[in-house]
Image (cartoon, rainbow, N blue to C red):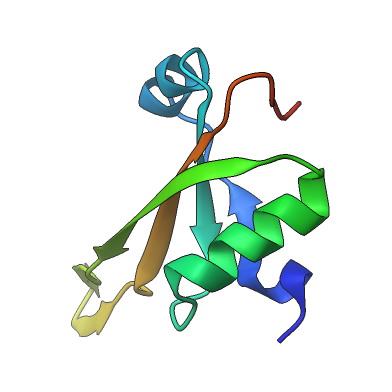
Length: 90
C-alpha cells in the first residue's frame, strides 16, 4: 500500500486547530491502516518525527432521504503527536 493511499486528508475543525498548537494533528486515514503504517506514512510524506499515534473508528450514521434509508461511510481518524521541533503546514 502506498503512503499516499493511507493518509486521505487532514481534518480541519475547531478542535483540531486547538490540538495543532500542541503539535498534534488529525488526519482521515484508510480504514484498514494500523498505527505503524500511519506513523510511517506521516514520517515519509511530511519529513517529520512522529512521537505517538491514536486512532478513532467513527461508525456510520443512518441517513434518510424521503422513503429511502441508507448509511454514511465509516471513517477512521488518526490523531498524530509530533516530537518537539517538528511541525506540519496545513
